[in-house]
Length: 93
Image 1 (tube, rainbow, N blue to C red):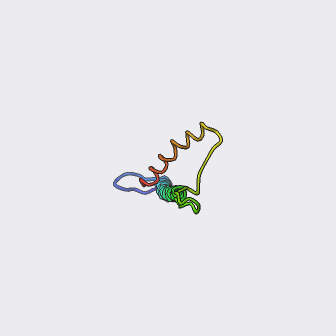
Image 2 (image 1 turned 90 degrees about the horizontal axis):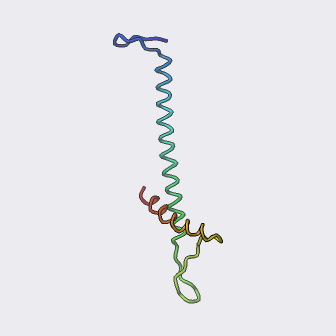
């Protein structure tokens, strides 16, 4: 289908395809935002669990009941550097 608009011949198929592409890009952008929001919420929840502090029944001292550990020292160091940055980014959103 062709149309004339302001003395310019327009191919309807090209316009339709361009509009469809724009719609899909917009929908995917919204989907990406939704996924990003959902991921941020899950990361915040993850750190809420990790940041839980309870009192020990025996000594009354504070302890963290949920921990992450690694038997590989290098990985533990990487996690110790990565986790605060992840927490900061998740709470920034």
